[in-house]
Amino acid sequence: MPTHEDLNRSQPVEQTSERFFGLTFVVVFLVIGLWPLIHGNSPRPWALALAALLLGVALLAPQLLRPANAWWLKFGALLHSITSPIILGVMFYLLITPIGLVMRLSGKDLLRQKSDPDSQSYWIRREPPGPPKDSLHRQF
Image (cartoon, rainbow, N blue to C red):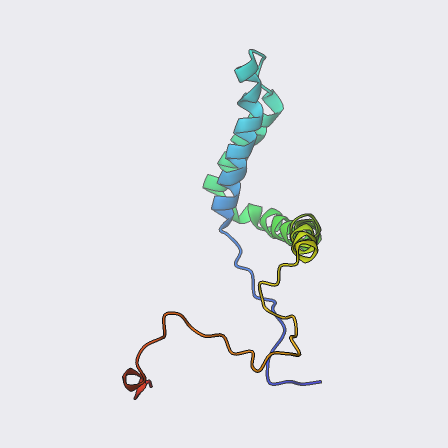
């Protein structure tokens, strides 16, 4: 059913450059390869070799990394579609729900939604009063 608003929130995702993608993974594999040195162990030669290979490809022929970059982008979108609802659900049930239950049990009504049959009006008096009426002319 067509509406006045487009509810499709999909936006085209900009793909990073292949060179930047390659250099990012060079750094990742350098960290993986050199991390054992912190603990006094020998470096991981396979990670250093892969970092060197990726560095060469990223600098000399970055177009070769286009399929890997596209795959990585799709993988990230898949992870996003899985983890975002989980994280938001956990936040809701571990943060918002307990706060709401505590407020209900303590009788708090911050939004003033309780009905009062004896009330003349639900108007909330402003103290101190707002700006003078004559300052509100020609607002637009």
